[in-house]
Structures are given as C-alpha cells and as structure tokens.
Image (tube, rainbow, N blue to C red; front, top):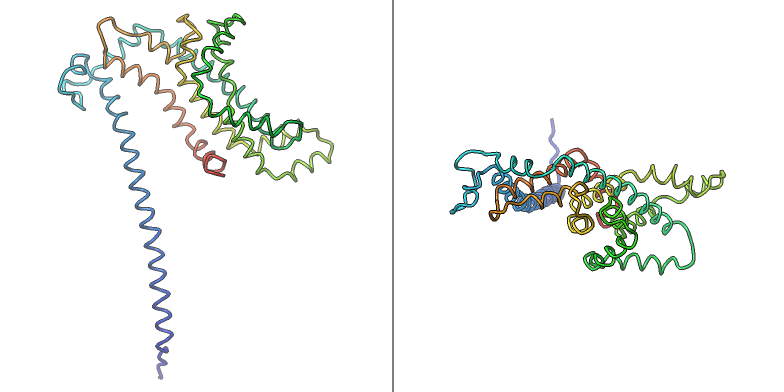
Length: 300
C-alpha cells in the first residue's frame, strides 16, 4: 500500500487556516468576557446601594442611626420601619391612586404619541417639518421650568386637588413621539398602500395594520411611561394637597416623624414605593428587552 504525502505548501495552508480560525474564536471569546466583566461591575455598583437600603429597612431605628454603620442588621431583622410607615399613612389608598393615574396616563399618552408619530411618518401636511422640529426641541426643555405655568393653568381651570390635575400635564411625551415616528418609518409602506387600494381609510390602516405590527415598541413605550408616571413625585406633590388624592411617592413623603430623620422608616418607605415597579419589570422584562432590541432605542 502506497502512502501519498501532502505537499509542504498544502500543509502550510491548512496550518494557517487553522491558526486563523483559532484566533477568530479567541477574539470574540475575549470580547464577550470583557463585556461580561463590565456588565458585572455595573450590576454590582447598582445592586450594592439597593441591597444596603433593603437591609437598612429591616434594622431597628436605634441600629440604623448608630455609628459605626453596619451593612448587615447585627441585632436581627426588624419590621418596625414598615409597621410605622403603614400605620402612619394610607398605603392601600395611595397605591390605588398611583395605579389609577399611572394607568390612565400610560393609555392616553401611548395613544397620543402613536397617532402623532404615525402622522409625522406617513401624512404630508403644511408645516410638518417645522412642527416636528418644535417637538424634537421640546425634549431638551427641563420640565421643572413648566411647573409654575402648569399650576397656574390648573388654578384657572379649577382642577387643583383633582385626579385631572395629576394626569393632564403628564400626557405629552415628545421623546416617545420621536421614537414611534422612527419605528413607523421602518414599517413597509407597501402593506398600507395595498390596504388603501382595497378601500380602507387611513384610520383603519393605522388601527388594523400598523398598530399590530408595532406591539413590541408599544409595549416598551407603555412600560417606560408607566414607570415614569409612577415615580413622578414633584408634579403630584404640587398639584394635590388632599391626602386622599396623593400618589404613593407623595403620600410616603408625608409619613415623617417629628423626632428627626428615621432611617429605617425612610428606607422602608423607599422599598414600598419601589416594590410595584420591581414586580412590573419581573413580569414584563421580556417586552422591555424586545422593545429595546427591535426599536429605535438601540440606535436604529
């Protein structure tokens, strides 16, 4: 039996290809490892203060205010901070107010932003570019400078100390109009043209074709608006003074002791305010990630 040896040049080619393939495998592996390390450091930097606040909420007031500060409750876990917060406030009522106002704000805001974004994306009208530029420019306007004129407007309309005073000023989100407009730009226009040829009007096309195709971005925008409305403290604090109308962040701020800062109680209040948002993220994290990955949030 005769053995045929491969030419030296062929062996060198095979060796070079194998070396290059190994290098390509090591390259992405090192890149992924470095990215994982950076994300791990960022996650720890975020989690450490959160865990410290959570553990502080389970300390006694004496231990929470004593020096030196300890990370772990050395005298055991205590729920006196939560008991004091719940006993001195109207937590169920405030949670209901936050849920009601945040849900209404989310539904109406998403509807307005989607309609406006679709109009800017598909409909030609006079002054379109100027109006869109104004909307984009309004994104950089600090909301704090609008507090006084908004409050004066609520006074004139007689809406102070009502749910409407909390809801109406939070319905406009120009950044969401921009995001939805960019998404609608990427929707194939041929689908809409076929429906228009078949006799459908623009509203029906928007409702039956565009919106079903936009579920990922609509879910992401809805979650972000809901979280923003739930966390909003400054405007509801200004708009209402009736404790029965307060949202959870505002109501918890009223639960203060006359004996100085109560660290355990403050941390317990923060945990109670954050708990619903954590649940929202746990239940809808897939929608959030899908929306960020498939829409303009990722730099589309």
